[in-house]
Length: 135
Image 1 (cartoon, one colour):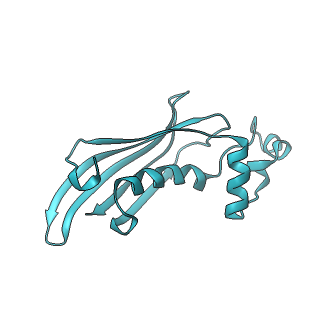
Image 2 (tube, rainbow, N blue to C red):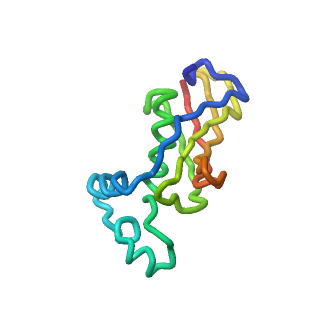
């Protein structure tokens, strides 16, 4: 089902993604964000963490992939996100979007979503947020 067919209460899920060291290295290279806390174990430990962890924007990109699977990117009108906790190596991230509002207006169907990225292994939320589309 695509977003244009959605009704209030519908829920969409992106298949689980496991965070790996290789993924962090590739993201660091692509983004130019080489902050040591994400790629250097000694730096992460010096900062009080057990291991390196995913860049926040990498974790948010998982939610972005879910959203663009639902509707073309130009239909996205607003995206808000709150980073709840770091996403560690080995986390199995499951992203969900639940339709919270649907309204037909002159310019199209307005759809609001509640978003969440959760570590399937621990049940911990990593990111929460919302999105609004016009389709």
